[in-house]
Length: 471
Image (cartoon, rainbow, N blue to C red; front, side, top):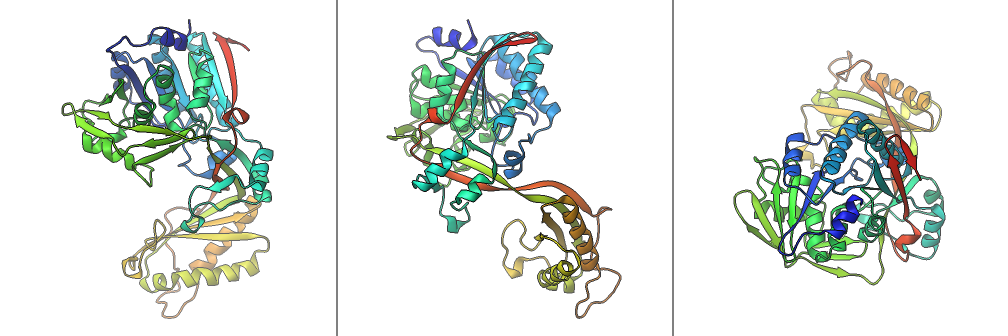
């Protein structure tokens, strides 16, 4: 029997709770081993790990690269795979390799295979692909079934045109519990999904076992971030114990406390509305949620409801290349120059465009004057400002050239009331210009209507026998 088939055949007995161990909020950045081992001692019925997010920005989706270091991904995969196999329980991983596109999923599978071979483990592995064909989105665009998630005037991604859709290097959709359940019915030991809703990782098996959807999804929404819901917040493993009417949360780090206030506050995490969480299959309603302290470290949660929608919707994400990027870093400590800095950057850019031919652009980030968030004039630094100037061009050599020439022209830029001709800038590094990878931007961060999950998400199952794979 595989791990999933064993759990479905032998679920928790009446009166017992389903024990769910969340091992990582983003696998590959270092699972705290001592906390994870405490979780294993609680004998969870399954182990889940979130591995990705859109938070690191469009580069990883566009480039197909992982954000986490390979060595740490390998270490974390070794911990969770060996832990799951020692207990013979399912291991479920979502948003493989950061952004969950096919290159990320394949890279994650390759590392998992490396661990399995090194440990001599024979396992059944199910995978979910989340990549969307452009043709499907072009049809949705022409039929009015593609919508911005928020009001574009508030700064969200606008509705793309056909050319912008076709410029995306990778496009993914977030799969939900429906797709996870379909994959789990293949009875794997390990399930690894491409781009996925964080909640699906932890809610799918409870739903298969008959637990209420509201409780299962609310539990999943909290524990996908491991102990971030605790005081003080942390990334240690967390254990949830799910029953028919409530669930109990406990961090596996004895120094962290899951309190009613800290757990309730997690409803604000990444949510504009703390009472409603939109899922592909419906809405998680937290208006009646209740939080009760069991002791100093544990909280009982109840009351969440799930309202299914008639037809599922999917969140879709796509990233397109902007160009090669070089970055110039410098500091300014002259109050007179700081006062004139925004206009100085414009003047120098006009001058350098006459010197460096070609299609390039400069994007300024003025730390101390609103690079992180807009600042009123009275709160802007007049003492010291950090400059991070991006130079974007189709070819890296042009971006480098523009950055170098811009540096020298800004360094010796003349302005009224200047006290010295020695230079306007201070440099922490030499060289002060850096190659900064390719630049990407999100073209898609939208809701897709009128598409069934089976039209989008692909399933595959393989039986790995030590050092060989049998399809």
